[in-house]
Length: 255
Image (cartoon, one colour):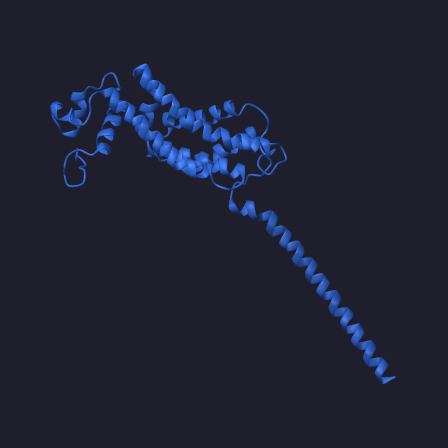
């Protein structure tokens, strides 16, 4: 494979190292993958690989940190935005799903190989997970306080939501000809989210969903048609009244 180099050609870029390791871990499994495998994938000798890493544990930990960095970068801006709380949560879900579908190899490793790490490194990963979950919990709690989301455990709601989103790595195949797009997945998951935690009758939980744009705009267009008919009727009545008034004034002048 072609190895990406750092600025100035000084050697292997960390990005290439982590991407290659993640692909191998996902394909062969963490335990079955050796440093020799990783070195061979990168066109290096094992001794040269030690210039960049000390162990497989270090690689796996960095893969975790990288994926959390990317997900947090995509989600955090929406969490801190001033949009309505239900729209904010939908955008966060969409951003999270976008990263999951774009980083299938890394996510496959991140969600299946955590137990292979030493306890101390696992604690660090759990802290990153908890911080990410807290972004969603804060928005859900805010929505509950506003009456947008139903009462209940924000923690459990978020665990269920993220579990649904993260499990995409198990079945999503971007090259499947008849598979759903990322936009379709995000839209469908948003609908599940709204019907699951939204308050009935509220604009978040009770907002109608439509099959297409024509269906979505039909209520507004129907209202416009009714207003137009009423306006035309009023204009016709005004023309009649104006004619009668004019005839009356002319008749009175002649008399």
